[in-house]
Length: 447
Image: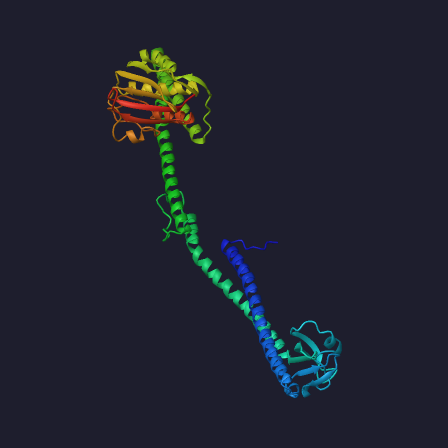
């Protein structure tokens, strides 16, 4: 059985109403006790005043003072009655045994027979032992006090549900007003679809928790919008990059089929098709690597790697192929990384420098107390100003001044950043010293 409502508004209102009911019940109970004590104290003060007046009159020799009181009796030390108010008749305010053994001179309420055995009523009495050993008892009917108590209880029993209901209604209205912006945000967020990428959440005025939540959600939607646009651009760029080699590959195969009687033409077409197939393979591998990096599943094999030795090996392997003069500088630096992935970083950066038309490339390995740095600089034209801030994004390529005749897909630097990030490092791009062209600096943790 579900006790709490399903909605947040209902749960908050329910908890508020229950808490208010408990607090209100305690307050009304304390009010009842306080009023009852006040009424009882008023009766006791009246009894004490009357008892003092009668005692003073008896000491002055006025033996009729007891009879003139509306409800008083005087008892001897043995419990016998000496005098009393005519209204009491044969009734006694204090039994003979109680009169003889009186120990406490405090007011108390008793049920006594006044005027007859069957007529019992509540009486508040105050006994007092006089100096002569006699006992003076004064009393007053407690029926008005009992009636006042009953009326007070009736009023409280009627007022309490009304007050609790009013508090619950007020709490519901307050919670409804407080959560109205949440309802608006919920409906607006539910109405936003992937097509309406520019739609924003309504602004909530103020600086309370709901207003901050609205701004946070709106900022999150903005970031999701940017991510969605980037992913859509990635799909568009990937489709564009894949379309070209596939079209060329199809054309070469169709050309080879149409020239089956000319072996030289068939061989040329097949060689061109093989080159496009290799380009497709590299592009697919690059896209797979970036996808794994985005998913956090890029596997990095950890072992000690000497960056200086790795750079020297790549320079000897790629120097004769790429064309630029590659100089390896710096000191022996050991990192804990994947040699194949780090070799891929060097290969991509050296290919980029060669594609930019650089004649000299410096590869420098350095280290300090916290990290290592692998810097690749060239004397090419450098990064265009419009590209340098987004050089490591996917499918970002410079203009013809940077990549003359380049047929790359613009994934090289994106792969460099992915591999370096998987090693726990960072990478940055700039133009300038030491050779005046592009400078890529990859920082890796010490091994």
